[in-house]
Structure formats: structure tokens, C-alpha cells
Length: 318
Length: 309
Image (cartoon, rainbow over all chains, first blue to last red; front, top):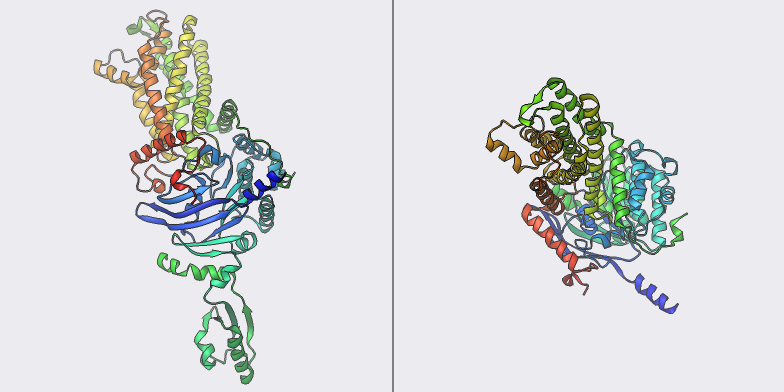
């Protein structure tokens, strides 16, 4: 018993994925330029970044679908380029887009894939798990986009993997199905499964991930817990308001005027010193006898931070 | 059930026969459920058999001991049926599965690549066998083709070797086909000229020596010739031409080796960005090296320079 406990403690402390100075080039294009990170066992780890940042390339190198140009990679203690069958028995993959035979039924597809694994879950159980119970006998070609995505998820889970890769797993889901997928991912985490996901949805990362890495232009531009990332942003609080049409920006006190930007008819300013700036703005409004319609004070969302962090990259790329 | 139970059964790899059986059933199921696929596989050789026999009904071939035309043309169409079910179908079905990303998804599972490929060979062979039986039945029933029963065992051996050869060639050509929409042009473009010079669509007994020699270098003429001579009750013999089988085996083994080492699982043309700037040959060499490294390090571990510090 004590032995088992010690082993469990050891297992928990293990690192599921280690990536050190990972490089990947496609011809003369560098897709990844020295990416390093670690994923601990049992963690939900997210890759965030704009299109072309290198998220899918990173995932596909970890999955063994692509060869790296340089750097060291270890997934569950194996090199994904050499791990072959041993590694694939322990991982589940949801690719961003992958095909299915439209003429097979949901159940036939799941049984076919389940048959490849040494430790497969019963196909019917996995169908229930992803909420396709009433589509069991339906041909794959009749499924909606969201239902196909759930089948993708089912195929990744059917081998009962220790490590699950999800490349934009809920793209195309309706809100209900997305909540369901989130609950499923949370229950997988509760079992100690390690999950690596990429996502475009900030709320998804904020809701699910223990740790997030922000990629832009093939480099890591930020790393931390989704909440911690806020602390790295240069501007922390956003103040929004409107002026009555008779008044112009020129009338604002200088400290406020210098910060303010016009954005979709709204005046927006970002400041690391919100108490002071807000006091100046409100005092000025009261002294002038004005009402600031639509006054709003918000902390930066992950989306704001993400946009700021990747701004330079988008300017170069766009 | 929920994953929360987490009762993990002891790991036990599925046996090769189970994996292979599942692949064969899967391939056949997909074929049967695609009406165009089944039509092309079974009906095209029958249509050619019917059309050509209508043209040559009642003629006899003096170059082959005066046998009826159907006695030459039915075995020739059996050869064509095998080529159609193995070579053509494997190229079109495999390149389609690759374009749709089905192969990429399969590559992410523990299914060994060679089992996928063998599944293709076995299912194509079974379909070819059915197609061959239908051709013989129609030839015998409608055109009076005479089945030489003593030649059947030898013919089955020739068929088996040919099925392996042409399915393997199909897999090899699939590597070179950029996308599924060029699969059929490439397949027909390579096989039709061969059919005309390989005693398949017509006997080439009076053709120039060099043309017959050239045709004998490719696998189709030895295959068709063997079948035709086995079922020629006047001139033929039930003895096998071993050198013909050798030609088929050499083509088949080379094609299978090429397919195994260079197979592409991802959509996209051969020169696509997937391999980066690596030339094809370097890529193939690295692939082979990877296989040796895997074999040497079983159970596979991180390479020593990759060990955590």
C-alpha cells in the first residue's frame, strides 16, 4: 500500500511533455522559432495564438504527425518521431480537420477505431459520453458539423488515453454542446488525464486551462495561468464613455485627453492608474454639469491581453 | 457509464489477425456502400467482355491452334478484372481516403501502417476473385468458354500472385498521385496502353518481336499469357511458366517496398510543405533510418540526447 502510494506520488509529479528549443521550418518559412515549455501530468494546458502562430504545427509535432527541424521533444517519456505504436496507444488526438467515411455509421466507425487500441473503452459508452446516443446508427454523412466534431472527440477518447490533444475541439459547437464538451474535459482532468488544447475562444481557455502559452509568429510571447496573464499586460483597465454631441474631446482635462481614443463612437482609454484618471474625468464632468452616458470600467479580458500581446505579430503578418 | 469509473483494463494488444480482419471488413463495407465504386469494379470488365465478343463472335484464332475467340478472350478479361479490382480500385480508393484526411486520422492510432496496406491488398484480392468468377461464369454461360478444370489450381496460384502484384503497384502509384482527382487519369493512363500490347484486348501474336519483348518486361503480359495458355485446350498446358510468376513477384515486392517506405498519410501533393525542404530521397532515407532506430530501441525510449537533464 505504502509502495503504491509512493508510486502514485511519483507518477503525479512526472512531466507529460517537455519541449526544448523547438524549431520547424517549411522551406524558407520558419513556423516555429525556438519554442520551449513543459506540461505536467494531469494538467490542462492551452496553446493560444492567431492563425499561423504555430499552434497546429506544435500539436502535430507532439502527436508524431510532423518531424521537427530542431530542438528536443519528449511526450510521455518518448520521442514522438520514434515512439510509434507504443506512444499512439497512450494518446488521443482531435485534429483540426480530419476525414471520416461518410457511408459508415457512428457505431461502426467507433468500433473500427476502438479495435486498434489495447485498452479501448466500449464503443457504446463513448457514444453516450459525447452525447451522440440517438445518432448511434446514423451514417456519418448525415451528421451536422457539431455532431461530427463530437464524433472526433469520441474517437480521441475511445482508446482511453493518458494524454489527449485537442486542436480547436469545440469549433462549430452550439453553446449547449460546448458546455457539454467542457464538462467532459473537466471530468477527464478529474481522472488525472493530461490535456493539451489549442483554441480561438478566450472564454474556453479561461474556463478550462490550468496554464496557457501565447504563441505569435512561432515564438512564445507569454506564459502563465489564464488569470496571471492579465498582470503582464501593459495597460490594465479600460474606461469607456460617451460625450454629449455638443461637447468635443478638446474640452476634456489634459490627463484624460492624452489617453483617449475614439472607437466606434465611444471614447476608450486604457490606464494602469484607473482611480486617478477616473476621478479627474468624473470631477470634470460634474463641474461641467455633464452626464457621461455609457460609462464603463472593465478589467482587461484575456481577449484584450491576447490582442495586445500578438499585435506586433499581426502588424508584421498583415 | 462515465469515465469517472476509471477501471482500466490491463493493456493487451489486439492480434494481427483481428486488426487485419477489421481492416478488410471495413474496406469491403466502404466499397459495397459506394454504388459507383462497386459498379466500376464489377461491371467494366463484363462490359468489355460482352462488347468484344459481340464483334468477334464465331471467329477462331489460327495463331492459337484455332480456338474460339471466347476461349482466348475470357481469360484475358479475367486478367483485366484483376487489374481493375486491384490496381485501379486501390489507387482511387486510397488517394480519396488520403485527400479526405481519413489516412491522417488512422495514422494517429496505434494501427501499424503495414496492416492498413495489407488490408487494402486482401480486400482488393477478394473483390478481384468475385469479379473473376463472374467473368468466367458469363464467358462459359453465354459464349461457350470451356473451363479446363485441370488448370484451375495453377490458375488460382497465378491469380493470387497477380492480385498481390497489382494491388502493391496500386499502393506505390498512390504515393505518386498528387490528389484524388488525378487518380483515375493516372491509373487508366498507365494501364490502357499496357492492355493493348499485353494480349488483353487482342492477341499480339503477329506484332513485332521487340513489342512483345517490351510487353513481357511489364507484369500484365506474363499474367494474361499464363491464364490464356492455361485455358487453351489445344495448344496450352497446365504447367506453370515460373519465369512469368517471377516477373509478377519482382514487380510486386519492389512496389510493396516502395509503398511501405514512402507512403503518404497526409493530404497534399508529394512536394508539399509537409516535409519542408527535404528532397524526397533524403526523406525516404530518413524514414528507413527511423525504422532501424525504432527496431534497435524497442521498447522505444527517448533518444539518449533527448533524455531529461
